[in-house]
Length: 247
Image (spheres, helix red, strand yellow):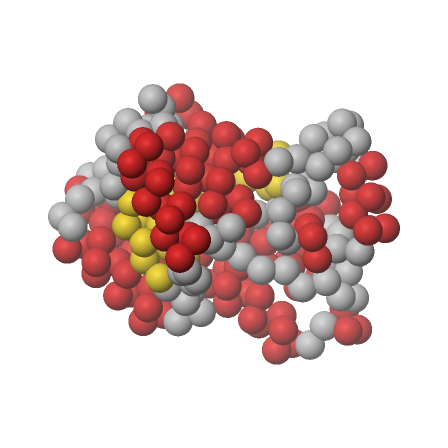
């Protein structure tokens, strides 16, 4: 198992890439602090089944990432567990599809609050704990190909994800001396709730830009995240890995 006995924080675990990554990380033997804004009976059942099937510990932390105090309180829970953090995967995010003229500054700030500032705060707290335990950890930010290539009608989304790429490269430089790796992935069109918001015409245009002429799956993204969390990628840091089918 690639992640046996590791302890990983994952945000955005309720659905999509986050939920699939949670399952893959558990499958590879890691215990997880699962950050999620929403918790219901179905999700609790899903977590219970993972615990039983893979014999790992999974703690559900219901957190609204727009609220700094809730993030701080969640990390207090982690500190009380007296366990090191081996990895952090910042997945939670949101999109907004509109041209610049139809995007308010308020809406843009909202996207930055979740897609960038919340991720940076999550990282700050994680690094403090990694430093305390002298953990040679792995931090992964989930960006987007639109942050690299741009995408018409996604000025707020692409710019917030681009900021995350800038932070990734800088933090890789800052934290390397501590043995902490910082990378990002840039998914393309992935079959998830986020792409479900696209108009069919726009969705097909994106799919046709790929070499495979299909959307990726959440598992294909999660597999890359597992690799970057594992010791197999021990000499990889400061990189932005495109998971886009050759867009």
